[in-house]
Image (tube, rainbow, N blue to C red; front, side):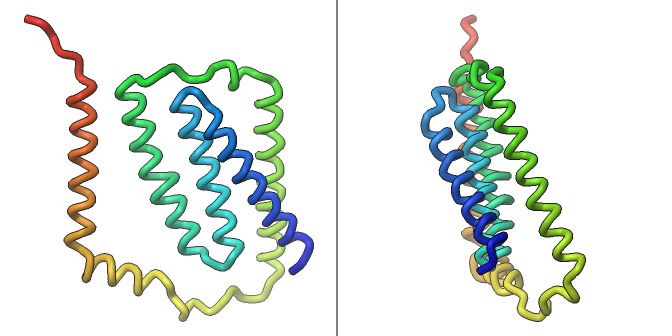
Length: 168
């Protein structure tokens, strides 16, 4: 294992642990949800580094994308608390976010530079998406659609519960 790979692995690991700790320690649910999204992105990076790119993409699409958006939507709809504005306004938090962003950008540039110098990419004949997609849309189609209906009913229920009753 080369030193750059080890550095990236430890970087994403520490980033996931730090984001998870910040997720647990937030008092307001919206910043906590955003730190959980950061944790999901770091875990996705770890999956990609462990030669599971499909799991990494699904991690971002399903958890960081869909489920967290629904969670933040329901939290904001129910008005469960104000955001932690003191955490965002601190100079240390902004500096830390900027440094993490620069480190991620540097990692991306180094990986892209190495990819350009490589000869061809791996053979695409070993496709992992096809078996998952065929099982999902053939064998488990009914369960997949029922799950989407359950999520829709949950969102409608949250809207009905959060709606204030008007006295006549």
